[in-house]
Image 1: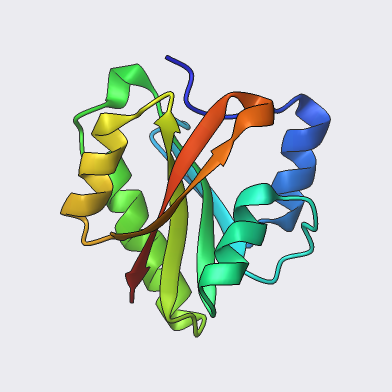
Image 2 (image 1 turned 90 degrees about the vertical axis):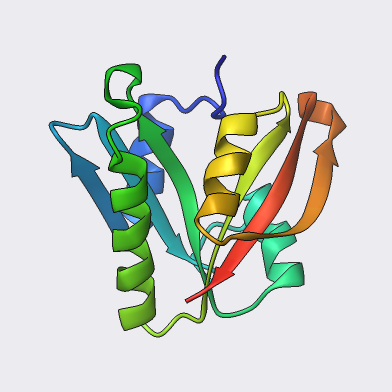
Length: 138
């Protein structure tokens, strides 16, 4: 199942230019990028929602772990690293979202195990999608 909103090359390059955190492990078998809550990304629906419900957070835009690398702990390593980066940068929280439509139970379980707390849900009927928002104090 495809959990991420698709990006073409130009969109990916733009998002990476906004990102202040970009890391990869093992020749990009795991990738995570994110940016501050006040990044110049005015049409990002998830960021808009989160800014209405949280403050002083660092946003995880995407984490991607290749199927060949799943179960190796790369996701946990990247989350620990981004949390340290955000803490050192002066943010009090990390925030992200996980799909509920289509549902991604593995990701929900991962975030709960990493002490993230659900703070709300949002449906996006125009995209036939829905998400649950999480945050963690750091």
